[in-house]
Figure 1 (cartoon, rainbow, N blue to C red):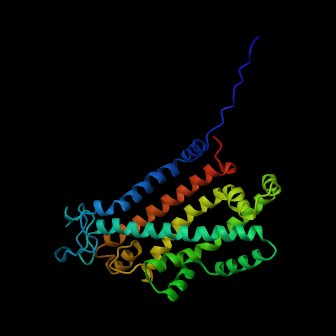
Figure 2 (cartoon, rainbow, N blue to C red):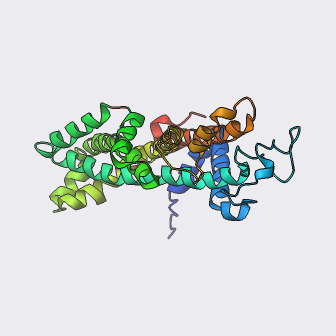
Figure 3 (cartoon, one colour):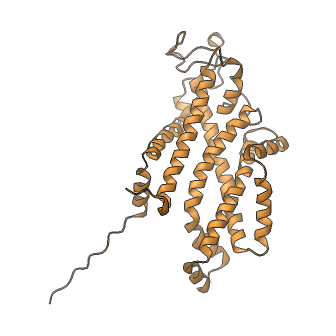
Length: 298
């Protein structure tokens, strides 16, 4: 009696399939490496910084970078108008800018997801109220809304996070509601409801995991927007206050020295550009990897 050996199909593992889709985008892979370098430098700033970010060297004000004429190896990226080391301020400023971006994304994503799910599951009475409030918030551009909130709350680190999070809240709410409405009508949700699953289980266990792909992509893009808005508020003097280093605040302080000492405005500007560009390219890679309809055809 012969026995037939059944060959099980080789299904790709979820993480492996995700990584293959992400790595297929060369730009996203390079952006991931660049952002990892920036994030690691920010996290290790206390150990990588040659000086304290607020320490002033009065004898070395507006010293050029080490490779420029008149530069000094003591200050690799030069010093600012108060004699503070630019490299140390950029590293510590990364902790502030990236920290505000991450905190504002979490502070807007968590309540936005909850409001979006409530609006999707209670379409008759709760959804209109939630969506009209979101429409009112969307009537103002994100940075302008953040300025209005800062005007009421006052400038500062925590208030900057709150202001940026309020501006990003409508995007998560609308996206979650749209994704949840597309899932509610599917058979697996109907089966779970027939099996006796309650509303909370349906929302957070059954539907939410299948809505995460667009939310993750939106979170990555919101991260870069939060960094830009943080820099914008700092440039206007409404965000993080001196002497705490922050990239936008550094740009604002360097406005009067563009011609005399261009490095004091070039360095933070290039850092913001590199960070935002890396995050946006990573968002494109996440979109390609998480949405099968958008994957590139090899």
